[in-house]
Amino acid sequence: MTVTIKTADLIESVADALQYISYYHPMDYIRALGAAYEAEQGPAAKDAIAQILTNSRMCAEGHRPICQDTGIVNVFVKWGMDCRLDDTSKSLQEIVDEGVRRAYLNPRNKLRASVLADPAFTRRNTKDNTPCVLHVEMVPGHHVHVDVAAKGGGSENKSKFKMMNPSDNIVDWVLEMIPQMGAGWCPPGMLGIGIGGTAEHAVLLAKKALMEQIDMSLLKERGPQNDLEALRIEIFDKVNALGIGAQGLGGLATILDVKILDAPCHAASKPVAMIPNCAATRHAHFSLDGSGPAYLEAPKLDEWPKVDWAPDSAAIRVDLDTLTPEMVRSWKQGDRILLSGKMLTGRDAAHKRIQDMLAKGEELPVDFRGRVIYYVGPVDPVGEEVVGPAGPTTATRMDSFMRMMLDQGLLACVGKAERGPAATAAIKDAQSAYLMAVGGAAYLVARAIKGSKVVGFADLGMEAIYEFEVKDFPVTVAVDSEGNNVHQLAPLVWREKIAKEGLLEKA
Ligand SMILES: O=C(O)C[C@H](O)C(=O)O
Image 1: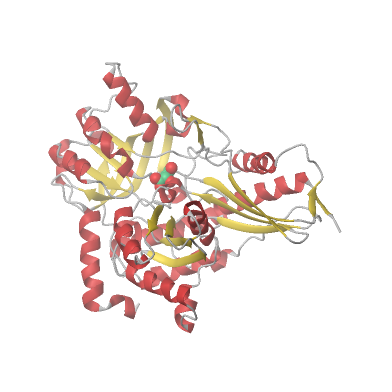
Image 2: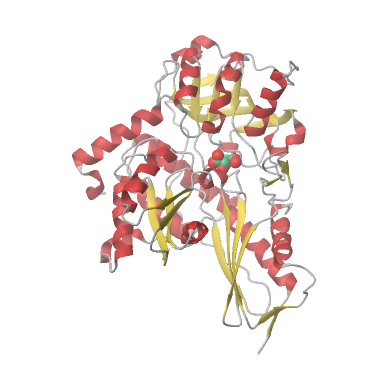
């Protein structure tokens, strides 16, 4: 029996699933994060998890994206060989891309276009987030199974691969890689690990592993039944013992689960890949059988933990419009701050263009003297919004521009994740500061943005320079003017505490 799948149904189902995952976290992630929140003892990490959970429920209620990085779309299709498409004039890539386009341009919940063509050179935004990355497998049967994911750039950037020698130890390699990955992948999330096959197969296995349900607490309760399950538990316990914690702020929950898929490999090799999934874990799964489009059922809002983050009333209130170098110098690593006033924005493309313009002696469109810059690429607003979700992007990518920006008279910067030694030294030399906001709390953070206008490089789309007017925008001092660096210090403290006090056994 041949089943006819309507092209329109496939497009509609992909678009619906992508809209769905932009604002609904998978419930297994929410349950695991809720449990991590209860167990967390690191105060800064607990606050970050509270922001992520509060943001998640707000997004589920408001049908707006969990993160400003609405991802690059990954699609895995298992095509039942008894199925045929009603319209064979387009490739499957074109059909699925049409679903992506409709989802990302949906006027009720416009998502961010993050995909750039010509990646090595002009890096032009394709404006509708196409093309997606599509994988197709032909399988027996009369169903089309589709897994869709929207993978954030920050976590994808931390993917690792090693062609190991057969006798090399996988756990040792993972434990060597995790600290190097820093916090730009927005922990707590999960790790997908692929072992075996060939180089490209191992990476694909790691990505597919991220589509599985989080079930580490069940696995630990019943105990491992095979070597792969034992390996999952060993990696889970040893990674969390590193004390990295939510957003790299030091704590008990760095990962919520480890998923491993394997495949036979050549006798000479042991390819291993690891891909993390961030706090904006987004994936959904549906099947088509020719009877119409698939629509996913909305989760119940009362399934979210009762966590309502509110700004810390003891935080230092800072007026950006009257900020002085003396005030910046008075901030200490770990201080909680609520920013109000005007703040500029800029991320990768804007920094590169500023560098090129300065090299040519051209005048910049914006004067950075006495200003604070926020590393962000916001989602476009819909309805009454002044801006869509607008959480921080990874500051580490701006490290090589830090000294250049400080030379322009910049007072401080805001982003997420750690700064490297050169950027930390530049901040110390200029007696500046780096403030961090919570990655994965973009809709919550955007509530603090009361005004927004583009003031430079408008052609860069979400990467343009904006001026935001903010009110009580929550940040923490991550590098202070003396070069003290939270991301270096806090995990060390928590690693020791976990080991000495056996905190993970008690959690
Ligand atoms: O692109 C962004 O907005 C964020 C990015 O995913 C990142 O985590 O650095």
